[in-house]
Image (cartoon, rainbow, N blue to C red):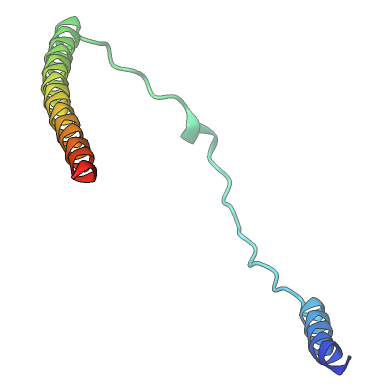
Length: 101
């Protein structure tokens, strides 16, 4: 009976002590007002159709290179998977033959 009371009293006192501690208030942050003209939209320069076409062509070439790289990676992964499946089948065969003998 004294053992639970021995553990309960320090727990109650520590909970009361922690509950009575007041948290520190954060330091107030002072914001400066924004000038009315500071948020005005900036004019967008006129787009050059030749530059856009060149950028589009570059993007298409990059996309095609990425597709070719992905296709090569997929072929390598398929070959590795086939090798792993063959190794797994060989391991299963060895297990089967070792149980017979």
